[in-house]
Length: 445
Image 1 (cartoon, one colour):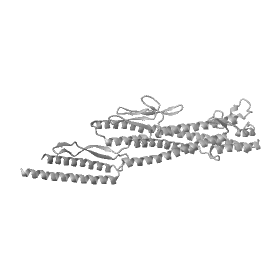
Image 2 (cartoon, rainbow, N blue to C red):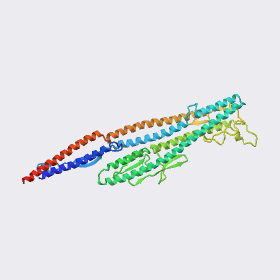
Image 3 (spheres, one colour):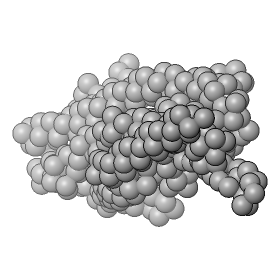
Image 4 (spheres, helix red, strand yellow):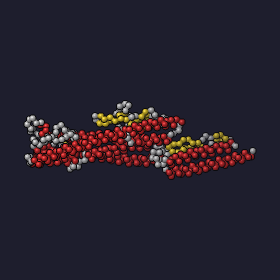
């Protein structure tokens, strides 16, 4: 009877094990469309044998744990690449917008307005007393100043939009950091018994994946199942169950900076879309400085050709070509009487080829300076586009690899379900036959 009872116990455990395996398979099938779900498997281990007269006799199998089919290295690579893709995606979008404002093919844009300005002075040099020629110079100068004003205004508006987007991005980042800390706490509590909180881990992975779009980070799992989250410079964002950073935006003299709210420490090497926005803001700011340098050189050079001035009490500054107080792209403007006491037009015209500015240590003319600026803008946008395209394809490839490891295949799950059904039926048969034998033994007594 003892052997029959043991067989009945083994069959009962097999039924219970199979029920859990069928439930796990059903859970997998239900989450087949969830890209952040990790396939689960209820694994069994052989139970300890017992000593009988004939030797050691097995006592069946028991459930060990429900494990996830997860590749930690692959997931870390995917999160890092996702951050890089978001970084260059933000740069491509912002710098692409700036490129439309700074568009210049040599015939249109600021270069075209500058060429028209020189052409007008050339016509005036041919006829110094011509009223029409003077009017053309004034009109060309006004157009050039107006285009600089407009471009500066557009870039200022872009910087304002950038600041708003940065501020808006910090709220979901802070929410995600707190969410990860809370999930750390729930996982640590759930896994206190030694089991793995698989669904909570999937929720945390989903939160980490969302966070990766904003910042680039590293994670390290600690005892209890919680994870610490650090930026590349080892700034702590989440520490186990105890700490989640709050990020704020600071508008500083040399640009924007993201800081930790409770310490005021500036955060470096953010990565992700936040890092891309900050890098874009710095790049646009540099282009704005280039435009201001151009405007200042233009004002100084043209006004420097003026030698005659009106008699007192008139203010000589009112009779220069450009207002000497407007030396930036946003403030450059013509004076009230730009050609009432004009310089020699040929002197102004001869200056167009002079090296009035410096680009990366090289002295260049105004026209060459604008060409360099256009090239710099185009190269920056092209670089961001190529980098983003490469990383986007890499994200797709890594996601596909992750799905091959952790994703749910309906075909595989149906095969598993069929196998588990057969196991369940076989265990039920063992219970039935063993029960019949026990009844037969009882009837014989």
